Length: 81
Image 1 (cartoon, helix red, strand yellow):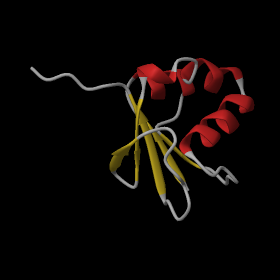
Image 2 (cartoon, one colour):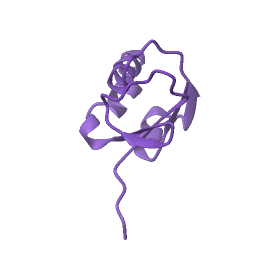
Image 3 (cartoon, helix red, strand yellow):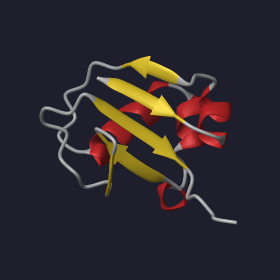
Image 4 (cartoon, rainbow, N blue to C red):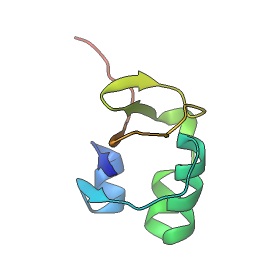
């Protein structure tokens, strides 16, 4: 699946997008897999309460299932103005 990173998440990881092969059942499982990869992922996902997630371009929670998902995107909360 494609995993996309936006704003400071992209800056910490150093990539805007990557292909990930995963056995993760939920977004939270995917985050744990990514955190175990390298320190830069651990730093980016240190506080998931500061992040939002979308699965196939639909905002969702970290307990959302990944079965059949093609894309997961991580980004900080947006503010209007």
